[in-house]
Length: 201
Image (cartoon, rainbow, N blue to C red; front, side, top):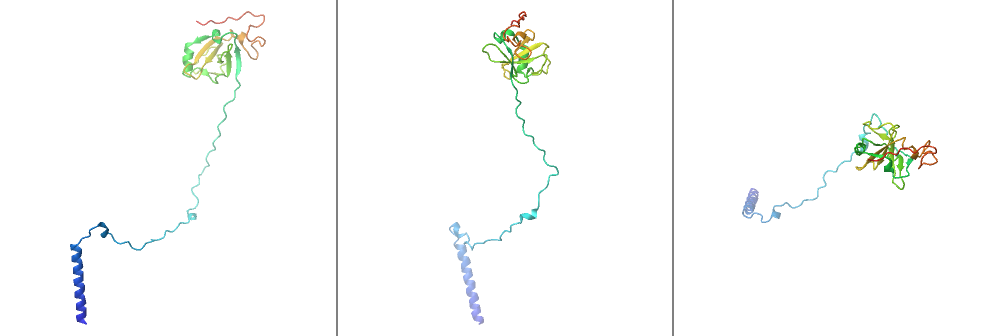
């Protein structure tokens, strides 16, 4: 029995030595020989799904958010004709260089463009603002004068032009309630002398 065991141990030692020598003398020739053969598939540990109910409700705001007001519609205005001239409008007024420059800078403009209108025969209307009752006039530099009427051409552009005239001189062409003398808006009032018309330089 002892002899058999000794023979088996000797054979195992010889085989192991030969294998090691063969491995050292004959290295792998391709990278695939270094790779381990694929083993059986491994599913791993299954993941456990958490219960969303254990999280509970989220944080509650102590104060509700303020309500957002809806935007207001644009203001509705009804334009009104205040002067209807029997000749070109620019002949009835004087061009103001200083006020025109202020209009281009937004320092002398109508609050609502063309709310009050004036025009001559077959002309585009001009915007109108008054110096006495400056309801439709934006004038932060206080350039307006009492008794003057201001006419605006191409407001809100770089070509804005402002013309001036005396309100009393334009009464024969005033067209509106309490004036225009209602009956002849393009002429002079009956029984009155013609008003002095300012001349352009």
